[in-house]
Length: 190
Image 1 (cartoon, rainbow, N blue to C red):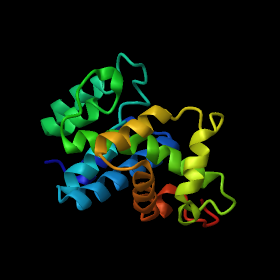
Image 2: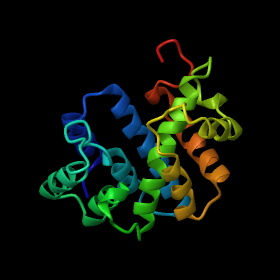
Image 3: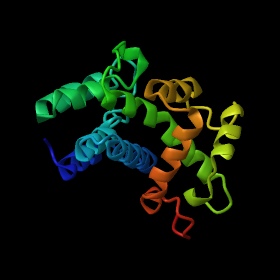
Image 4: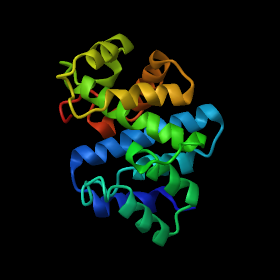
């Protein structure tokens, strides 16, 4: 298994955008939290979350995203289950999310970005101030965070077998633990 340091170096080799890096750190945090909850390998799940979109900035087209990344990950010696979870986090890959890891990566992707967007529009810019009801309200506002696929958020919670409310609360808590890294701790530097 690769180390987090190796995974982060690969992420930073392919991803330069600060917002995409923060998204990767957010999904990593959520995946790590779910690994702890389910008694799974936290390092493996965290690395999978960290790398889930590592190829997106260079290969954003539907024909390339996750496909090019999967080849790179295979060449680098990443485990097949990590590669499969990354490949299956996009529905257009037509891969069944049959493992807990693949379901968690999918479920944490869109909701992590959405929770971050909700925190960013709060006057405090602090994840600690984000509430489940605020996230649910913003989900109904189609103009807010337009790029976030709401259907994937609902489907992710369903595939995990948890209520949307519980999933949102869990992700808020997971991201709050890394709020300074995400620039969402209310500090002046955020």
